[in-house]
Image 1 (cartoon, rainbow, N blue to C red):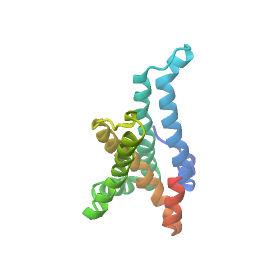
Image 2: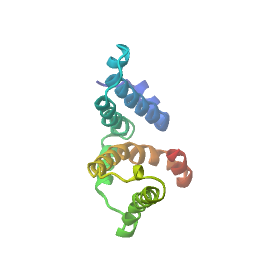
Image 3: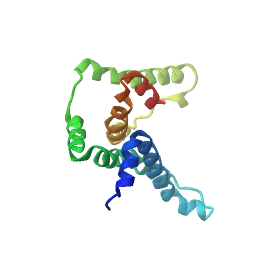
Image 4: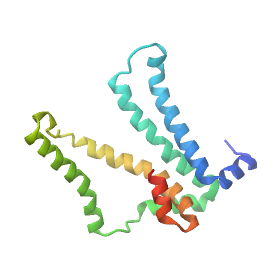
Length: 166
């Protein structure tokens, strides 16, 4: 589907706002499409449908980031986006810091299990780690691959990072 020059101009003039609107529209409409049939019939949403909304919502950032990169930056921008996804620019110590949050959560859960109740025992849902990695990759196509560079153009990378994080 080809876009008119007016639509492309709007996306170029408001690149970040276009990204947020499109991302949330795709994510929430996709999630609603999964659960709406049950909700409209007044039925409870089964656990599987709730779980299925997760990958459907991940499409928003990825699709929006790729689509708007193509519209706003053209084919060169798309090649640049995909080449940045393959680059590893940080050393091992930075990747080791990624283990801090799970280690802290595990420590808190073990303390709660010992001091409060066994109900706080950590589970062993190791497949969840793979879900998290895939989710992170899909989300970051849009958030850090498209939105952050556009927001940081003002020269204030820290401000852009804080705003995007919020």
